[in-house]
Amino acid sequence: MAGQLPYDNRPWPERRDAALQNQTMRHTIGFVTRRFTLIKGEIYRTSPDLEASRKTAVGQKRQAIRDLPQLLEQFRNQVERRGAHTYLAAQAQDAVDIALNIARSHQAELVIKSKSMVTEEIELNQAFEKAGIPVRETDLGEYIIQLAKERPSHILAPAAHRNRHQVEELFQADASREKISPPQSDEIEDLTRYARSRLRQEFLRADMGVTGGNFLVAETGTLVLITNEGNADMVTSLPPVLVSIVGVEKIVRDWASLTEIIQQPAMSGIGRHLSSYTTMIQGPKSPGSVEGPREWHVILVDNGRMALRDTEFEDVLSCIRCGACLNACPVFREVGGHAYGSVYPGPIGIVETPLLTDFQVLPELPSALCTLCHACQEACPMDIALPDHIISLRHTIVKRHLNSSTVNWTLRTWARFWSTPGGYRRSISLARVMQRLSGKKRNAQGLFPGIFAGWGQTREIPQVAPKTFHEWWQEWKERAEEK
Image (cartoon, rainbow, N blue to C red; front, side, top):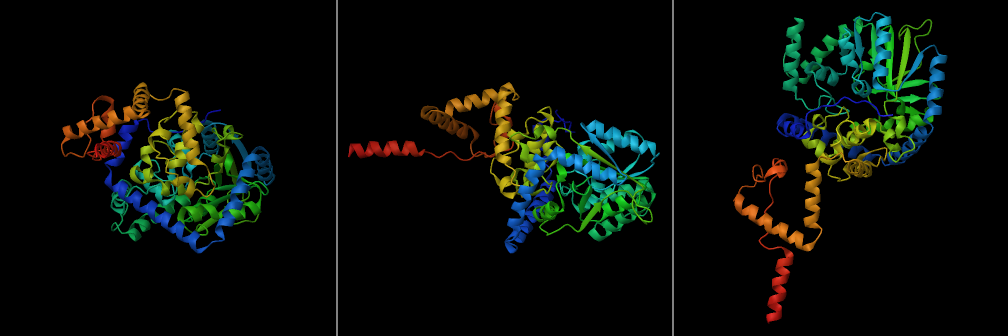
């Protein structure tokens, strides 16, 4: 069954051009991704034993996906045995409805959230706000993009596309609306101090907390959250009601498996052995406990995931949302996450978005946003065959006639020219004519006619050689024969 994902319905050229013109975003995204990649390389270089642990984690995660139905049942039994509640949401809307019903039954007037990609996927915030229930993001990056009314631009760093000057402007506007003291400057310390003071009151007033989940341990019915700010500890311990919304693929078999795999997101994402905070939830507050929720509800989201089992794309379910493929991808570094139009950007988004939605949204992703450089597969700690999957998806797009007629005509024409030596030579002659028409202008914008015009908007024309090797070789042979 196909899932549902939110998406940006602007045409790809419009998303692309907006990204390429946003110099601040390109600078900040480039800085963040290169920094994460360098740190990751350093930790693997100085800790050679990590590679063996990573390979063990891959094998254990693959086995957990194969045993997914049994492990989910075991997890649900363990959670309910401790007095909590579990639900299986087949579609995104099912998960939203369950969460809304829980909030309404407790007359929640304020909901606080820790960072969660799956709640972005099901558009939980929008549904709660529409129902008149305010939601406050408590992760700093998510808080920033909530104020900006944007989607995350990076799986790991949601506000990586914004610099501190832009963040200060958002905080100043927020302070003005709330009639409170604004941040004193755009220094990082002042900005985080302002966010901390704003969120502290929300933590204390909230009626319900919402989390995602990094891992689900079937053996014990434990939900594991890893964060770098500690806000998840507040979200899971202060409100009387806690709702955790987690993709079914997050399951692991037991503590031994968790021990191996829990290091992988931090090592591949931010170059650390572990994230700063690891929070484990194993049921609601027990009698005599000082903290923790009185009620705990776990919503397990399918939304197209189970359909990937026993297919060539099954390994996609092993993704641990570390962001390593985004950090390594040269296309992502240039256009950032919003250009993809999907809640899941980068190479993993190129694969997941068409698969989870059966190509109902953004079918252009596999063709438009990948150079097949294979950097993503080299970076992926879970050995997901992303380039192979992208090629398979391109084949599917052609077979299902999802490309526009103009794209198909263009590719057929190109293939016809370059499939024979004579056609290739004629294309070179044509290129020389176009080069003479353009003079010394390297920018191709406005040079190509009709459907080829878009190709030239973002490219510079390489200079065509006065003679190709074949032309030079032919002349050399003719001169040699004359001698």
